[in-house]
Length: 359
Image 1 (cartoon, rainbow, N blue to C red):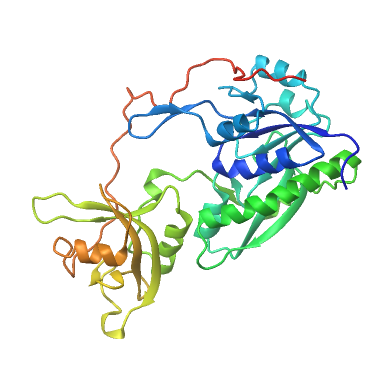
Image 2: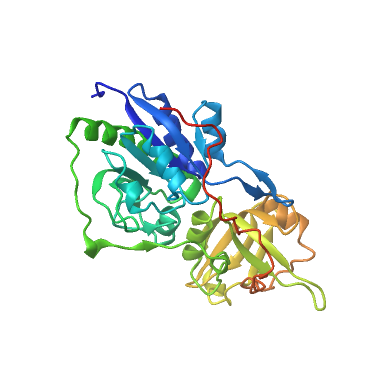
């Protein structure tokens, strides 16, 4: 049921996954998106050229005023939002914590869309962690935000199965569609006073911390099933990888693995050392022994410094430098961070609007 008056909303989001939610809000006849808050422009690519994020680009294309504060809880942001007469703040993959004053500002509250069935997978990478754990179902939760990390009352949920071929990217696409419908339904229920609030069960809590660089590597001592899950969980970002040693005195090669399938090993080679290259099939791609008597067939890869190619193309092009019997290794340890590097450091400035919001 549509509300009698447009619901005045500020949307906060930064990731590409946020964009379908903003689009749904902007298209809703009973919602008025009065401003968008997103992360500041960042350096991207090899030359770190400063570029706007996807949410900012989308908002500007829809003529929606944009705020890009370094600190969303700064006084200038509070003053700006307080002057807009908003009913609700909707948050989807924004990237900053909201303080008490901001949480208490809108009368309908701050609604967060989280891509898991809370309280399972609280945190930054819920889809990744669900695939890694072998979950068969996930979903989207609309939650009333509070001071904790994904701890607020549940306002509504929609479920989504995880197929054996799903990646983080494919699940995210489906969840953005069903989650957008949930978001609008919750907003309308809040407007007419019929939205339930269900506390989360603390006994069911699990956490989804950020993906660390050290997690990107495939561990060949683990089962082929676990490594295949990691490949799907890390697709499209950050990507799973392995390391192929070079000949004596020559460097090896980092190989990003973007898709793979699990195969049973013949009994005669079922106890081959994990990580051993068993085949370089010109039609199927490389086959590498894993733990638990199974193997991983690499079907889509990206060699270091090269382009994305099929496993078959890799087998044809890299056969001479990747002999049968070689053992793929864990990734070398990354170098320690350079304390002089400032790429990830943002200046301490108050937030400013790229387009002044109006009431």
